[in-house]
Image (cartoon, rainbow, N blue to C red; front, side, top):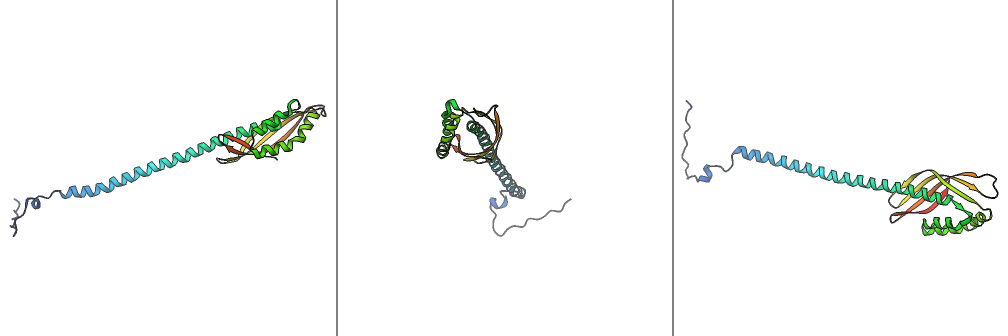
Length: 189
């Protein structure tokens, strides 16, 4: 048999609250251990959620830039074709088309520099058909793009016995205007 331990009386009477603790030592220890685990899990959930939001924003921006690059290439191809194509029977139609696709500054420059060319196109009954062989974006952001285009231009006129193919390399600087790209500058390379 186990020896009995004698309980000594207290000099002051004990209340019921003092004699029966509200929490067992195990519950207190578990509660203290459980709180850091819950806190760590909560922090982990918040970090994963923030990471997900940042990843979504990043990939959304990349997708938007890819769409802008693609639309810039399409616009660059159209503009390069317009610049390389003309017909003496309606020489101003090409000029008007290029000007309509351009910034105001470039449209003015293009009209001024093309005035003498229009006279030669009419005088020699010249036609040209531009064909973009390939094009790619060299630089792009949300408001500007630079497109490089490889263009073949099949030219016929009264001075040529047979059609001639000129191979042009164009650098087209584009500016974003709402949902459209506008031709802002062209450089022959």
